[in-house]
Length: 172
Image 1 (cartoon, one colour):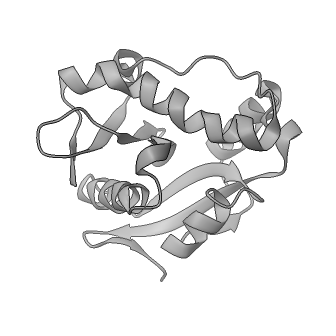
Image 2 (cartoon, helix red, strand yellow):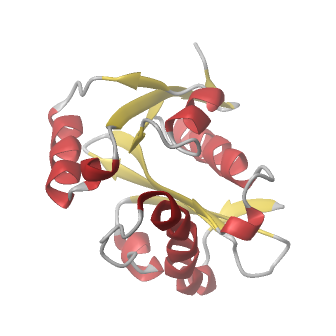
């Protein structure tokens, strides 16, 4: 497995990866009614960075999208196709995103996720993230956006944060 910055040719695969990963939510929640995934080109145009998990120079099977929003590094999306889950790709992507964020001068990485979905908050807790109440206008705005999108109808959501260093996520 290789974690690397997304290339132009990787962008065409990101929506497919996200849609495949979202099938697990559909299995858990039933009809989810979410909008289609953003295209890779749309993601690449946003401020921040995209990392992919791939085998050598092959097409990616997972990605992490970190946004730079008002001076905060926010993990907007982590997706791995179901056939490649539970093999370390998600953890490797999060750790690489933490290293990249630290290299860009950030001291923490935030994300929003489901509290009771095993591959959401419990997964991030194992990596060193902790649930917090929104502290900034941006964090409150993100929670409001999720509320307007109706994401909470599938279960409680939480804001999580982890300290980041050149080594990755730290529990300090």
